[in-house]
Amino acid sequence: MGRKRKANRDLPERVYQKHGAYYFVTPEGKWIRLGVTKGEMYRMMAELELRPAGGYTVTSLWNDYQEDELSKLSPATARGYIKSKKKLLETFGHMGLDQIKPSDVARYLLLRGKKAPTSANREIAILSTMYTYAVRLGLAEMNPCLRVKRIKTSPRTRYVEDWELAEFLSVCDIQLQCYVELKYLTGLRKTDMLSMTLMQIKDSGLYVHPSKTKNSTGEIREFIWTPALRDTINRIKSLPRLAFATHLFCDRNGRSYIDEGLITPRFDQLWRKTMKRALQETNLKERFQERDIRAKTATDADDSGQNATEILGHGNSLTTKIYIRSKQIKRVMPLSMKLGDKARDDEASG
Image (tube, rainbow, N blue to C red; front, side, top):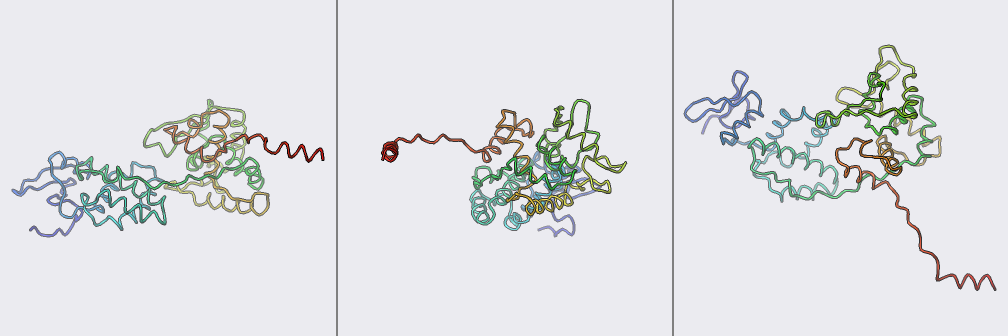
């Protein structure tokens, strides 16, 4: 048995880091260069049919995935992965990759799902993504999550009625009014709304590079001018702002409401404060979330015959249909009354 490592304990057996690169050392003492990143290292090990040993666990896999792949995700998605991996690693972290079976994944969903079904689904989705990475690099033979059925959850059904939105707007300051109007017209996500700058206002329309798809489809979208969009943008441009402030929406000090990592604590506080006031001072009885306006945009667009998928920027129309269906109300014609006609006629004649 070899000596225990004093450093780089997360590396596979017989793999060492030297001069900025990774090497595999054969029993004969030959050093085989594997690459400068862990991704290159594992790909070369797979090509050479060298499987990691020496206690490579799901925790080891998470560490490698975090180093190689997490930066390719949007900041919000990466933040969600980091938050969700805690419970996942508490259960599976000590296990070797080939030890986890589909039955283990199903049992996790069953037990974890009793209290937090949505979180359970999300955590297994992350585990599945990690295993896809592991299989690609030859770290695992199979992905145990693939054929395990997720917990069925109900989508959010809150639909904001026109009068409710009007009541909320009545207590908003001018900037938040403009925000809500632009949100409704475009259906953009909060991060894209708060990231927008004056430079995105072009002669041909409003240009948006959605943060969620920036590292995947890379799609840049242009909202062409309509009278309503132009009027809202003109109101936004006329908002009082300091000379150096370039974001469409910013605080009194000229700072954007979106911070590093695409988090929005100051805007979220403003939304909660305004919603509380609306519930106290208007006829609004039930609060709604900022994201519910995006859902209203999709539902209203579909009701009016517009392409909701195009407006929301979903890659798949099925996503939009599922998103809309839970908020639409199916109108049904009641059956005509026949059985009670004679009784009513008798009562009228008597």
